[in-house]
Length: 270
Ligand code: NAI
View 1: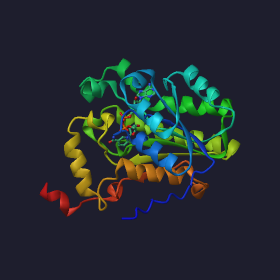
View 2: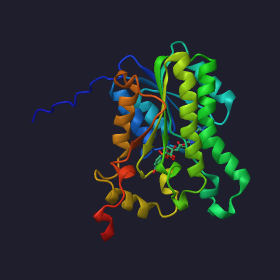
View 3: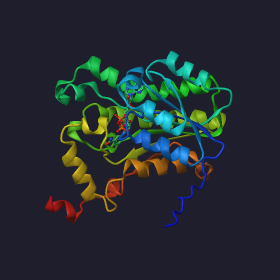
View 4: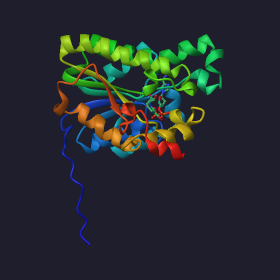
């Protein structure tokens, strides 16, 4: 039988991007990277040096013919090296897909928070976004009209008790997007937004206590069900493309409708 190839719209033809945070094939960033390349983009993959050793990002880099550069996102020096190494043409888009809570990982209850862990969590999950944007602005690394995205979660607005200090990390991350979005927009016409994604089965996601239960709850509560990592890839492509040039400083829900729901009879039966 004749196989008809799936046509790509080439929405990102002639665009260059950096994708942070692909660890393995479950990672949201992994799916975003695949979608960006299938839409014609040339990308650089990056992750913390430890993830380069332990994860499967090397596989992805080979598959997508994408260069791979290690960078600890909490290190301004590493970020500047990364941005300098791939210069020689400006960057059109960046995905920040980085999150890690030390207190959650070590099983510390929210009411027994370790403050050194908390600061590290904020640095990795939120301040790294500011560091990235500040480095990119100083180095004039982003093309005019470029697009910067970070992934976030609705725990920034509502209480999810087992999400720990990641809730405050996400609130900070979203605030950085708004504040830096003003400066980047005014100076360079660069867009900065956050995408608030449904619960997704990944290393970071499934580390949260009771993840299966709240994954199922969100899935039932949302009229469209949970948004997959693959669908998140599509949304990121749209936000990196020239079709969304006037969208900035927004927190955009990509959650199948979850954020607007009050009650769904479907959850009464779980
Ligand atoms: P993941 O575990 O696959 O990705 C997290 C990434 O952060 C990993 O690749 C890890 O190596 C990287 N990372 C950690 N410390 C780093 C550092 N110092 N420097 C550079 N990279 C570092 O998990 P996932 O779920 O794909 O997470 C991506 C983003 O999506 C995170 O911001 C997460 O909070 C967010 N998100 C995830 C949801 C979920 O349910 N999985 C829901 C909503 C948002």
